[in-house]
Length: 195
Image (cartoon, rainbow, N blue to C red; front, top):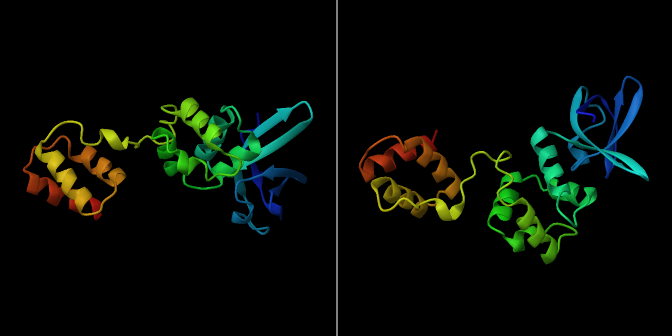
């Protein structure tokens, strides 16, 4: 397998880029080709070498995380490389993981080629298997599961102030070792959120 391709961008079009690697042009299908410019030098593209009996194609990504998501999506029945590439092109991996974990079909069916059946299959096949792609992910329903402690009350206050559950989960993790009053938790959480 080819881990990555490094070199200047020789050509950019709507479907792929061409990288000049020591005089050899590699055609690499990428999620957002226009992210690259033809004058870019020393571009590193992490690749997936897709091999079938009738084709060999290089798919490229800006990060290993994007490539790993692509590989996970390929494992879902009904999603091929073009569909997986279109999903990765959305650029919001965290939102995708959240949609899979919460089985949000409405969000998942927004991607081209993904209907209700494929969205259900994505949730079935990938739910709980994307933790290495989002180590900070905290399921929404489990955020306040410990009871009515001062920290829980502080977190509920932060929700009322409009902070996202992802932000609150990070703050909660940082404050979980401290024993404070509700007001002190709120003040400390706001300090952490405003850094």
